[in-house]
Length: 104
Image 1 (cartoon, rainbow, N blue to C red):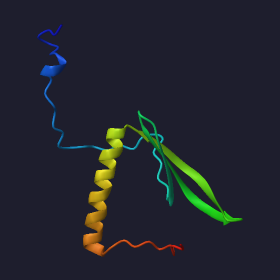
Image 2: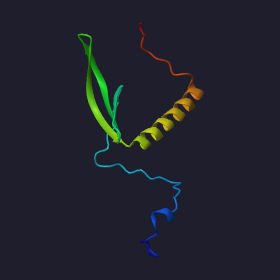
Image 3: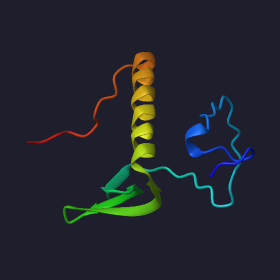
Image 4: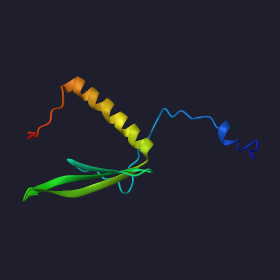
């Protein structure tokens, strides 16, 4: 039961946040990556980022750099932000083209 100090869940209004401050965490990681592997479950998306170290015997050797786990909602928000930023980048600098020769 809700009291005067604790409104019921339905009564809580959504807060609009217009400023974000970023502080560096103790485990902040900045790394170049050129490989991403994505796995999903009903509860989350896992993105494993890595850097291709070499190609040996027709096999990629990837050094894992970081793994990020997020909710499906956050993954969709990330996809939207990436798509918007890619569109802005291409508008300013031209279309991003694949640099790898695609063989059939």
